[in-house]
Image (tube, rainbow, N blue to C red; front, side):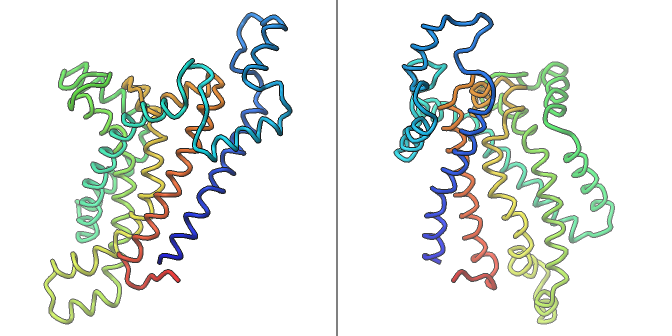
Length: 305
């Protein structure tokens, strides 16, 4: 297990650098610069700007400087937010996205696991059909549709919750529900499929034949194997929640990491874009490593050599 973890950790840095390299290349291929405006700048002003930010150097020199900075964990200064480093901006906006993302996934786990397990135990029942139909609805309705509907009904209509902005527990409810809906639907369907497969396996039949009560069979034997598909989904899903809150943050005017990432792309703020991409890529690989490690605890048949 230890050697497996070390090998995976050693892969994270080169993989993150590869992702950053591809992102840097795409930024450079796109037309325009961060200092472009409706009115063309004088040639002297443009030359001074390029010299200040090292844009007058050859592309390979610029690439080498960028990679060396990222290896040191220093993403440099933002091109649009003067006097602010990329690290400061990321850590300032990350808590908003992390709070919404973690709460949304906890809510999705509660509803998804419960619905999936009960649907598997009551296969072909009214609850099974109803919960899976609701899950399909959750998969079909995108965040940019669900969010405004919730605001229209519960904020502007019934005045239960604030329509937007950050502040207080009540302001979190609508964004969290909006973000968790699609993940709860995925988890419910994955849990149902995983539980159905496990409940039909030989070792579950053996456990029942030994006279174990249904609660013990379910919690001690079936549950760990049945949620393996959900665990596989959890790693990339958690990282996607941090990066994929863009729509929710836009709808509810939350100053999170997704919102600032969109602004960085619109502003052509290269250091900020690269910093967020590198941070999220490392986060995704770490979450996937945690998921792979958890397999060994959930399923005794899995061993890492």
